[in-house]
Length: 415
Image (cartoon, rainbow, N blue to C red):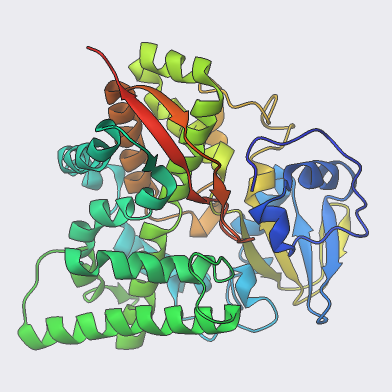
């Protein structure tokens, strides 16, 4: 979807279709969300097949839905591709489990992913990113969006214990989960694409665990650690290990590439911002936060109302599905002045909710922030200028806001 909105336009809220894939692949949902925040902060939509959902678009309402599991449960599904069908992994998959069990599992996994824990990876990450950028510096067209899909695997593969020979396949499978209608990743119907990718990813982790247990080897990787996690008094079952491993693979691979390409595209459109960042390298962390706000790669998350719940001036009925639109919350004018301006000096950019909010705040956020900071430090140091060399192509997904193609040409920075 377009991250820089076009001009304001009339929006008929009775005809808005937030499941229209064209709105994200070639359209512009931001004017729609602007009107929804102003006039319909709780919006109800019924799909042609009878499924229905409510939407919240204001920052405070999004935080409330994501932050209070007593009002809005995760245990029927958390992504819009599951709308209408309860998640069979609920209560076992960490992302589809409420506290206290969610907290027990998350705490054990998160201990390996704190800012202090991942800091020791900085030099290795910097070397990886330098290698990633080298082809762009050698001249010719470099498709950043396409190449960036592999970047998280290059960074997190060793941390997870995933051999390099498997990275490309796993990246393809995780993209199939989150964009099953995009021609770049689709295999058959959307349902078939989801079924194939879910099965292959869970099977991969299941077989990985079997091999590890049979060999008795441990390498200190995150997946090894997952095999030793306990929730309360009991260890995770093999099914829970497979499902949480699947979730970790998704989280590691899905959003960072689109944050990279979307932020670089914003800098290409605004060379004065790029020059400002080059002139002051200390702005890199704030550039990352503004890039996270601007791209909002995980565009939304879903919850279900536990009981009739008043929010946004209306009522979501018990068991009603509610979609919290992160892409809208991060452009809420009540929180961010001039929200449709990309400004790397924005003083409250870190209030963005691109990593979610509340109990399910992204457990890998410290590693993602580190990776993004190092990426932009290296980019600013090495690249004198960046220009488009063709039209960007946006992802056909209402869950992930991203690109499949961003052809660029880079000029080396003269030292």
